[in-house]
Image 1 (cartoon, rainbow, N blue to C red):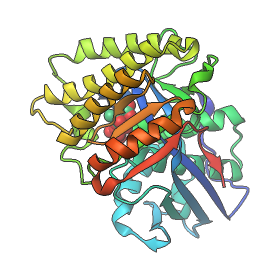
Image 2: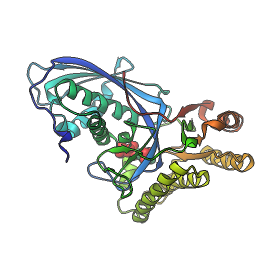
Image 3: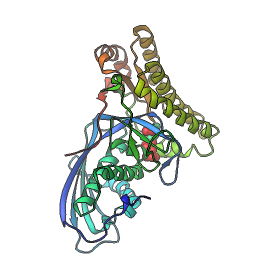
Image 4: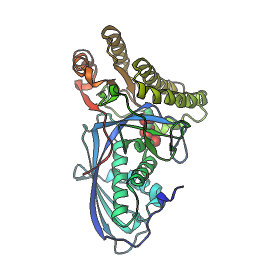
Length: 359
Ligand code: DP6
């Protein structure tokens, strides 16, 4: 492992301080589904970093009189104590402790809030873990750790990955790639790297309207779903397909071929859900309104010739993706035909963003 991850031990520049970061969610176009210990992906994935759906996290840290054997963590959600979140953070701290040697020497008060509606069914782990990771790297630097700007982002992505795989793709934007891939320079299974090509103008400020089809708790968590890829009859072919799709999409993002873009993105979304339906035990996360929305998007695209397409995450919600220049017409379509298929007619208008920001 790179020395970038060396931590600084027990002599510190500061005894206390406070840092705060906002980090966005992201939506994968080439999906990560299947992993090996510890949090290493079976195939490379590529995502659009979002802008509106963000977590804002502040950490106040203070040197403990005596270093503890365990971590000292207080967690507040939207300003109110939320002890039920502490075990998750504790597990995260245990995983990252070898790379952040200061963790047991300080007490931490973590205060976090999301910009998207609570229980919207939107995964907050990507934005949450990446905001937390950015804060911890910042603390390490305040304490005396010497990391360049590039190393900070790399380390934050590395740490975020240990919290939740897809979180490592939220540190930077507008497009990031995680997982070793022969055509992507510096790509790694350990952290995400920014897409290095020149993004075709059609993708600039690309729109993602997230239709909240079902805001309930998922019946099967991503972690369980990933594990079902062990021994899955189609796993090997799926991992090869994802890497091939990434290579094609890498070219499409530069040449702006919308037919190919749509084909790759929609095929990836449906393949992800096909993997769920063909695992043992099998499960279905789409709802009937997910399918109705998909059919409505296909009909609209055919009739209007507007290059609007969909992707899905590990749930029933639909991400409607389209170029900014078609925003007006597509929003009319969403309001007239798709909103009624959302729970309480709710959707979130998001667009491409540029990653985590210091607050
Ligand atoms: C379908 O990153 O949530 O969204 O590593 O177990 O935390 P863990 O899983 P997670 O899986 C995300 C799966 C996905 C596809 C993707 O984002 O690439």
